[in-house]
Image 1: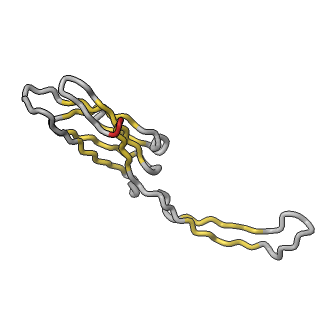
Image 2: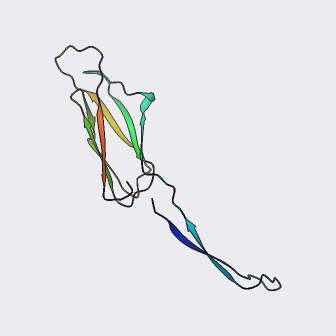
Length: 129
């Protein structure tokens, strides 16, 4: 996000023979409507893993260009693990999705089908993120 900016529009005579009057200058206010955010997309529409078996992935990408690095820390509960455990986006790669692999923790407890959670915390010195 860039905040409100001002541009100057100058209209003048570009060719001879055309009479427009005097050159006019007008300031124009440009309001930035980008919203900071994160988009997560699960592969296949869901994230399903199994103990000692299948892993799954999802992607994470920012929705607008930051002015400084944005780090997203992934904190899984005791049922799953992630690789990587954090993602860093810069103002150069903010729009390139990063992959996260999810693995079920293979423990000795018989639990049947159950769920795991992954918390995502974003930190940045960018005031708009």
